[in-house]
Length: 267
Image 1: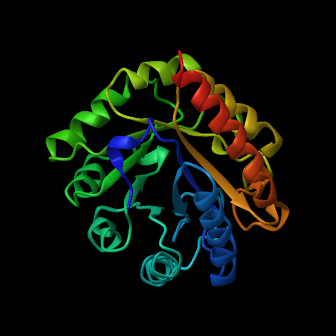
Image 2: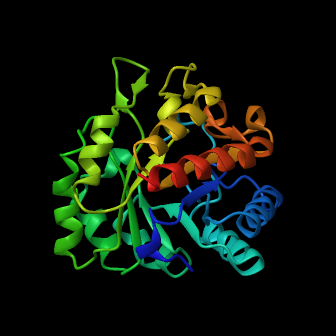
């Protein structure tokens, strides 16, 4: 179970592959996340998308879909005891997803879709909203207003970079500080922040080597929650491989984030 009220005080790590590729991949990543959770003072949420509905091209891999994907995530939850996060794209997906998920995630491109936000909020599950690449930090107060009006105050806001010309993103850390002032925990999506949308001939590129720096910079300004996509072999991943952190390198990054988190709390 996630202790929502401890987020920020106790570091939260949302981690996993971008999309459900196979049962074996989910198990391999989940096993490592359980090991890390048992070793370090951190709350860990397992993340994988059952459907990537916003891929760059029609031929891109999307995942197993709602029914099969939720079944696979439910099996991971039962086997490993990890809370689960996945994206929803349609209001009709909110109720069935909430039967399995502990956190419903709203993709950045959809963060102003009122019906989707309301449907997610009404499940009474934690809702994580990714800030759109075209919005400022303060703009997210209107997104929060929709969720609060639907009766939900277990909310997370995620920074994932802002459009910087074509095929590039930049992180404005002042925007993170402004979102923190809105009264809800802010999550740093370190891996999507180094994505280069649509820059790889019909799919997104990125530079995963920079992702740890994005995360550590956020930790230094007081962020206590992190979203990090990870894969045993990012070069073989079926979605967002170029911006992922290799699974074997996740522990080192977690150690660094915990050290920074503890240091910032002393000030």
